[in-house]
Amino acid sequence: MTTMPPAAPISLRDVVLDFRDLTKTYPTPTGEYVVLEKLQLQIKKQEFVSIIGHSGCGKTTLLTMIAGLNDISGGEILLNEFPITGPGPDRGVIFQSPSLLPWMTALENVQLGVEQVFPHATRRQRQDISRYYLDKVGLGSLLHRRASQLSQGMQQRVGIARAFALKPKILLLDEPFGMLDSLTRAELQDVLLEVWDKEKITAIQITHDVDEAIFLADRVIMMTSGPRAQIGDILPIDFARPRRRKDILNHPDYYGYREHLIGFLEH
Image (cartoon, rainbow, N blue to C red; front, side):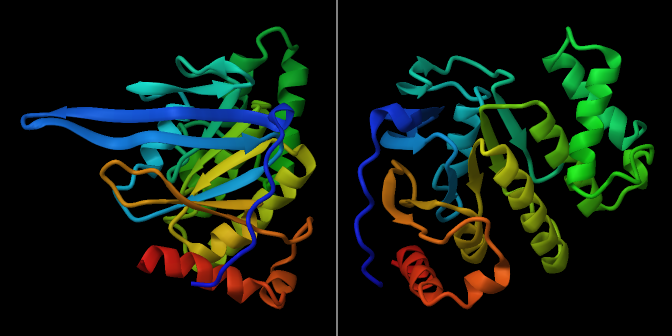
Protein backbone atom coordinates (compact mmCIF):
# COMPACT_ATOMS: atom_id res chain seq x y z
CA MET A 1 0.00 0.00 0.00
CA THR A 2 1.31 3.46 -0.90
CA THR A 3 2.15 5.60 2.13
CA MET A 4 0.37 8.94 2.09
CA PRO A 5 1.24 12.02 4.18
CA PRO A 6 -0.89 12.47 7.33
CA ALA A 7 -3.89 14.79 7.12
CA ALA A 8 -3.70 18.22 8.71
CA PRO A 9 -5.66 18.50 11.98
CA ILE A 10 -9.16 20.00 11.70
CA SER A 11 -9.90 23.22 13.59
CA LEU A 12 -13.00 22.88 15.81
CA ARG A 13 -14.53 26.03 14.32
CA ASP A 14 -14.50 24.34 10.89
CA VAL A 15 -16.31 21.20 12.07
CA VAL A 16 -19.94 20.76 10.97
CA LEU A 17 -20.36 17.07 11.94
CA ASP A 18 -18.68 15.56 14.99
CA PHE A 19 -19.01 11.82 15.68
CA ARG A 20 -18.16 11.00 19.30
CA ASP A 21 -17.89 7.34 20.33
CA LEU A 22 -20.70 6.57 17.89
CA THR A 23 -22.04 3.06 18.44
CA LYS A 24 -24.83 1.11 16.76
CA THR A 25 -26.08 -2.26 17.97
CA TYR A 26 -28.96 -4.50 16.93
CA PRO A 27 -30.53 -7.16 19.19
CA THR A 28 -30.27 -10.78 17.99
CA PRO A 29 -31.35 -14.10 19.58
CA THR A 30 -27.72 -14.68 20.60
CA GLY A 31 -27.09 -11.20 21.99
CA GLU A 32 -26.29 -7.75 20.65
CA TYR A 33 -24.73 -7.41 17.19
CA VAL A 34 -22.37 -4.42 17.18
CA VAL A 35 -22.32 -2.76 13.75
CA LEU A 36 -20.33 0.36 14.66
CA GLU A 37 -18.24 0.67 17.82
CA LYS A 38 -17.01 3.98 19.34
CA LEU A 39 -16.54 5.56 15.92
CA GLN A 40 -14.70 8.91 15.96
CA LEU A 41 -14.79 11.31 13.00
CA GLN A 42 -14.99 15.02 12.23
CA ILE A 43 -16.24 16.48 8.95
CA LYS A 44 -15.59 20.05 7.91
CA LYS A 45 -18.00 22.65 6.58
CA GLN A 46 -18.24 22.64 2.77
CA GLU A 47 -16.24 19.42 2.57
CA PHE A 48 -17.02 16.55 0.18
CA VAL A 49 -16.33 13.21 1.85
CA SER A 50 -16.55 9.73 0.30
CA ILE A 51 -16.95 6.68 2.55
CA ILE A 52 -15.81 3.29 1.27
CA GLY A 53 -15.56 -0.18 2.79
CA HIS A 54 -16.70 -3.74 2.26
CA SER A 55 -20.40 -4.64 2.29
CA GLY A 56 -21.64 -5.02 5.85
CA CYS A 57 -19.18 -2.54 7.37
CA GLY A 58 -21.96 -0.14 8.40
CA LYS A 59 -21.64 2.58 5.74
CA THR A 60 -25.38 2.87 5.10
CA THR A 61 -26.09 2.50 8.83
CA LEU A 62 -23.80 5.47 9.45
CA LEU A 63 -25.52 7.55 6.75
CA THR A 64 -29.02 6.80 8.04
CA MET A 65 -27.91 7.79 11.56
CA ILE A 66 -26.69 11.15 10.23
CA ALA A 67 -30.05 11.53 8.45
CA GLY A 68 -31.83 10.84 11.74
CA LEU A 69 -33.60 7.81 10.27
CA ASN A 70 -31.82 5.28 12.50
CA ASP A 71 -31.52 5.47 16.28
CA ILE A 72 -28.12 5.96 17.88
CA SER A 73 -27.26 3.18 20.36
CA GLY A 74 -24.32 4.93 22.02
CA GLY A 75 -22.25 8.10 21.72
CA GLU A 76 -23.57 10.98 19.63
CA ILE A 77 -23.44 12.87 16.33
CA LEU A 78 -23.24 16.64 16.70
CA LEU A 79 -24.46 18.82 13.82
CA ASN A 80 -23.16 22.35 14.39
CA GLU A 81 -22.60 21.34 18.04
CA PHE A 82 -26.21 20.11 18.55
CA PRO A 83 -26.96 16.36 18.91
CA ILE A 84 -28.91 14.73 16.06
CA THR A 85 -32.11 13.24 17.48
CA GLY A 86 -34.20 12.72 14.35
CA PRO A 87 -34.66 13.71 10.69
CA GLY A 88 -34.77 17.34 9.60
CA PRO A 89 -34.68 19.58 6.50
CA ASP A 90 -31.08 20.54 7.31
CA ARG A 91 -30.07 17.13 5.88
CA GLY A 92 -30.94 16.16 2.32
CA VAL A 93 -30.66 12.55 1.14
CA ILE A 94 -30.12 11.19 -2.38
CA PHE A 95 -30.73 7.44 -2.46
CA GLN A 96 -29.76 4.86 -5.08
CA SER A 97 -33.35 5.06 -6.31
CA PRO A 98 -34.71 8.64 -6.40
CA SER A 99 -38.18 7.64 -5.05
CA LEU A 100 -40.20 10.00 -7.23
CA LEU A 101 -43.98 10.05 -7.45
CA PRO A 102 -44.42 8.59 -10.97
CA TRP A 103 -47.66 10.41 -11.83
CA MET A 104 -46.14 13.82 -11.02
CA THR A 105 -43.94 15.86 -13.35
CA ALA A 106 -40.26 16.55 -12.68
CA LEU A 107 -41.20 20.07 -11.56
CA GLU A 108 -44.00 18.86 -9.26
CA ASN A 109 -41.70 16.27 -7.62
CA VAL A 110 -39.15 18.95 -6.74
CA GLN A 111 -41.82 21.46 -5.67
CA LEU A 112 -43.33 18.90 -3.30
CA GLY A 113 -40.17 19.02 -1.19
CA VAL A 114 -39.69 22.77 -1.59
CA GLU A 115 -43.23 23.42 -0.30
CA GLN A 116 -42.46 21.49 2.90
CA VAL A 117 -39.20 23.32 3.59
CA PHE A 118 -40.30 26.82 2.49
CA PRO A 119 -43.98 26.99 3.51
CA HIS A 120 -43.97 30.80 3.76
CA ALA A 121 -42.56 31.39 0.27
CA THR A 122 -44.97 32.40 -2.48
CA ARG A 123 -46.03 29.87 -5.09
CA ARG A 124 -43.91 31.72 -7.67
CA GLN A 125 -40.85 31.69 -5.41
CA ARG A 126 -41.15 27.94 -4.80
CA GLN A 127 -41.58 27.31 -8.50
CA ASP A 128 -38.54 29.49 -9.33
CA ILE A 129 -36.37 27.51 -6.87
CA SER A 130 -37.53 24.21 -8.38
CA ARG A 131 -37.00 25.39 -11.96
CA TYR A 132 -33.53 26.73 -11.14
CA TYR A 133 -32.20 23.42 -9.84
CA LEU A 134 -33.86 21.32 -12.54
CA ASP A 135 -32.19 23.58 -15.08
CA LYS A 136 -28.84 23.11 -13.28
CA VAL A 137 -29.07 19.32 -13.69
CA GLY A 138 -29.95 19.62 -17.38
CA LEU A 139 -33.71 19.09 -17.22
CA GLY A 140 -34.85 22.64 -18.01
CA SER A 141 -36.68 21.42 -21.13
CA LEU A 142 -38.35 18.48 -19.37
CA LEU A 143 -39.98 20.25 -16.42
CA HIS A 144 -43.45 18.99 -17.29
CA ARG A 145 -42.48 15.41 -18.20
CA ARG A 146 -43.95 12.84 -15.80
CA ALA A 147 -41.42 10.95 -13.70
CA SER A 148 -42.68 7.65 -15.14
CA GLN A 149 -41.68 8.89 -18.62
CA LEU A 150 -38.10 9.71 -17.61
CA SER A 151 -35.13 7.35 -17.90
CA GLN A 152 -33.44 6.12 -14.73
CA GLY A 153 -30.62 8.62 -15.21
CA MET A 154 -33.05 11.50 -15.69
CA GLN A 155 -35.01 10.45 -12.61
CA GLN A 156 -31.79 10.59 -10.61
CA ARG A 157 -31.19 14.09 -11.98
CA VAL A 158 -34.57 15.06 -10.54
CA GLY A 159 -33.48 13.52 -7.22
CA ILE A 160 -30.28 15.59 -7.25
CA ALA A 161 -32.22 18.77 -8.10
CA ARG A 162 -34.73 18.10 -5.32
CA ALA A 163 -32.00 17.54 -2.72
CA PHE A 164 -30.18 20.79 -3.56
CA ALA A 165 -33.46 22.76 -3.82
CA LEU A 166 -34.19 22.05 -0.14
CA LYS A 167 -31.05 24.06 0.78
CA PRO A 168 -29.76 21.51 3.32
CA LYS A 169 -26.65 22.05 5.46
CA ILE A 170 -25.60 18.44 4.77
CA LEU A 171 -26.10 16.44 1.58
CA LEU A 172 -26.11 12.66 2.10
CA LEU A 173 -25.61 10.41 -0.93
CA ASP A 174 -26.22 6.67 -0.61
CA GLU A 175 -24.59 5.21 -3.75
CA PRO A 176 -26.71 7.50 -5.94
CA PHE A 177 -25.15 6.25 -9.19
CA GLY A 178 -24.89 2.56 -8.29
CA MET A 179 -27.73 1.40 -10.56
CA LEU A 180 -26.65 3.39 -13.63
CA ASP A 181 -24.56 2.41 -16.63
CA SER A 182 -20.98 3.71 -16.68
CA LEU A 183 -21.63 6.51 -19.20
CA THR A 184 -24.68 7.87 -17.36
CA ARG A 185 -22.80 7.47 -14.08
CA ALA A 186 -19.92 9.65 -15.34
CA GLU A 187 -22.36 12.27 -16.66
CA LEU A 188 -24.17 12.51 -13.32
CA GLN A 189 -20.91 12.68 -11.35
CA ASP A 190 -20.08 15.74 -13.44
CA VAL A 191 -23.57 17.20 -12.87
CA LEU A 192 -23.32 16.62 -9.13
CA LEU A 193 -19.90 18.27 -8.90
CA GLU A 194 -20.97 21.23 -11.01
CA VAL A 195 -23.95 22.01 -8.76
CA TRP A 196 -22.00 21.23 -5.56
CA ASP A 197 -19.16 23.58 -6.63
CA LYS A 198 -21.70 26.42 -6.76
CA GLU A 199 -23.62 25.51 -3.58
CA LYS A 200 -20.59 24.52 -1.45
CA ILE A 201 -22.54 22.53 1.13
CA THR A 202 -21.09 19.63 3.10
CA ALA A 203 -21.55 16.35 1.21
CA ILE A 204 -21.08 12.77 2.42
CA GLN A 205 -21.25 9.98 -0.14
CA ILE A 206 -21.19 6.22 0.21
CA THR A 207 -19.66 4.42 -2.76
CA HIS A 208 -18.07 1.10 -3.68
CA ASP A 209 -16.32 2.75 -6.63
CA VAL A 210 -12.72 3.76 -5.84
CA ASP A 211 -12.44 6.01 -8.93
CA GLU A 212 -15.68 7.79 -8.05
CA ALA A 213 -14.48 8.34 -4.48
CA ILE A 214 -11.23 9.92 -5.70
CA PHE A 215 -12.90 12.07 -8.37
CA LEU A 216 -15.53 13.56 -6.08
CA ALA A 217 -14.01 13.80 -2.61
CA ASP A 218 -11.76 16.06 -0.57
CA ARG A 219 -11.19 13.09 1.75
CA VAL A 220 -11.93 9.38 1.44
CA ILE A 221 -12.93 7.70 4.72
CA MET A 222 -12.10 3.99 4.80
CA MET A 223 -14.10 1.82 7.21
CA THR A 224 -12.90 -1.45 8.68
CA SER A 225 -14.93 -4.59 8.02
CA GLY A 226 -17.75 -5.33 10.45
CA PRO A 227 -18.80 -6.23 13.00
CA ARG A 228 -17.50 -3.50 15.36
CA ALA A 229 -16.55 -1.32 12.39
CA GLN A 230 -14.52 1.82 12.93
CA ILE A 231 -12.59 4.32 10.81
CA GLY A 232 -9.63 2.39 9.40
CA ASP A 233 -7.88 5.13 7.44
CA ILE A 234 -8.48 8.58 5.97
CA LEU A 235 -7.00 9.66 2.64
CA PRO A 236 -6.90 13.40 1.75
CA ILE A 237 -7.39 13.99 -2.00
CA ASP A 238 -5.36 17.02 -3.00
CA PHE A 239 -6.81 17.90 -6.40
CA ALA A 240 -7.78 21.49 -7.19
CA ARG A 241 -11.41 22.40 -7.80
CA PRO A 242 -13.32 22.68 -10.03
CA ARG A 243 -12.29 19.24 -11.31
CA ARG A 244 -12.26 17.84 -14.80
CA ARG A 245 -12.16 14.10 -15.30
CA LYS A 246 -9.38 14.24 -17.91
CA ASP A 247 -7.18 16.33 -15.61
CA ILE A 248 -7.70 13.94 -12.69
CA LEU A 249 -6.86 10.85 -14.75
CA ASN A 250 -3.66 12.49 -15.99
CA HIS A 251 -2.60 13.79 -12.58
CA PRO A 252 0.62 12.18 -11.26
CA ASP A 253 -0.96 11.49 -7.84
CA TYR A 254 -4.07 9.73 -9.19
CA TYR A 255 -2.71 6.20 -9.34
CA GLY A 256 -1.03 6.57 -5.95
CA TYR A 257 -4.42 7.42 -4.41
CA ARG A 258 -6.02 4.50 -6.25
CA GLU A 259 -3.34 2.06 -5.10
CA HIS A 260 -3.73 3.24 -1.51
CA LEU A 261 -7.52 2.67 -1.49
CA ILE A 262 -7.38 -0.69 -3.26
CA GLY A 263 -4.59 -1.79 -0.90
CA PHE A 264 -6.79 -0.97 2.10
CA LEU A 265 -9.78 -2.84 0.68
CA GLU A 266 -7.66 -5.92 -0.14
CA HIS A 267 -5.92 -5.92 3.25
